[in-house]
Image 1 (cartoon, rainbow, N blue to C red):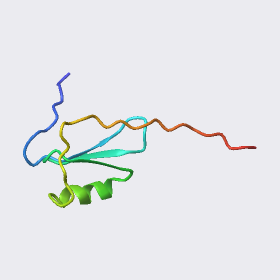
Image 2: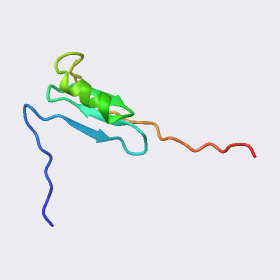
Image 3: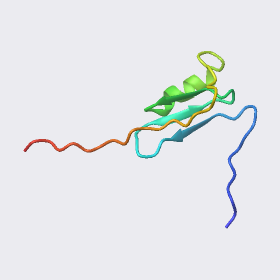
Image 4: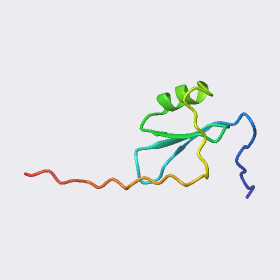
Length: 74
């Protein structure tokens, strides 16, 4: 099986799904990150670089709290 490598570079922006959540994380090539529920606001933010971008330092993983199902009363 061929290994898959993640593209890196000065102009790479990406949006990743945060497992066990309904959240997406956008990461700009400058290192700034943002979490949203929909991809459109993330792409608008990414493409507006540098407006609103504040690179995180040091880089810390973003974790999402798992959603739990709630039973509705019958």
